Image (cartoon, one colour):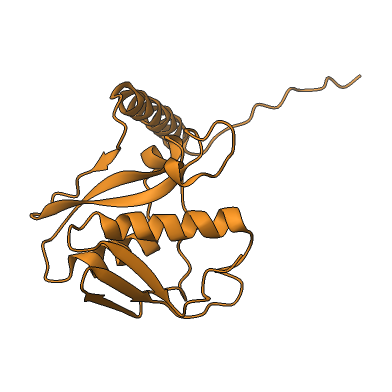
Length: 181
């Protein structure tokens, strides 16, 4: 009777396999420790310092973790801070950055969410006159609709981001019907 031989699996490159596993473990540990350090900070406003000379601006996004009752109230549209280059158009720059919707994984894990970005939804113009900032956006089918809660959060994000600048007392949108639920 012929004996069955056990086959051993041979890896052509065992060092690569071991290196890959070690790398995976190190990356996992790094993510875990980074999240632990971030949450231990206790800051209400996560800060991302991009090593740029300039000033800090606030971008306002909805925070689902703070809104425990799922009210979608504008009081849960909270700031995150970005350090940006100082320019002659800080309001437009802040709105443009808000619309990019670039949240870090730390900010997302802290509960921040965004309805942005939509590559077709961009700031066309911004006019400030007597404290009234008029922001013009393109009509993007389906983007500025979808229920009063969603539209309210989008509008509040834009308004709060704009009103951080002392020269802005009121914000209007063009076209006026743009943010209709």
